[in-house]
Image (cartoon, rainbow, N blue to C red; front, top):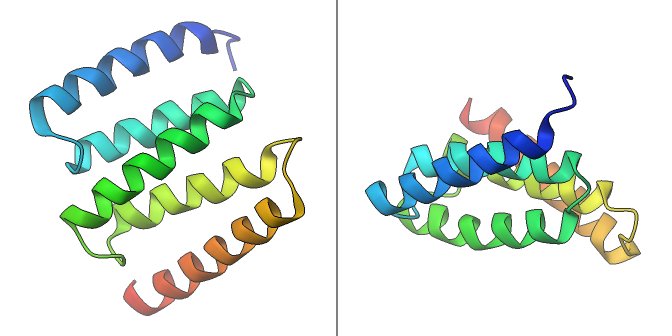
Length: 112
């Protein structure tokens, strides 16, 4: 960790915006951008923004591919992580995170 997450966030936002303009929301490259961007947001403790982006992108990713696709599973893992890392998480948030992760693990075992 070089302590330059704020700088990384600016770059990740730019890359995300450019890829969305180029490929559209459901493209796999955009999903990778979402995973990177939201990882940084969580590290910066911007949980609400990370969860909002993940939930929005998850619907786009699921429309363009099936629920077992590795990109969809990665986005769901990130959402679970953001839900349970948030200090303001409610009991329902933690239960949702656990439910998501259990489903992701089961799908990965079955598919991969």
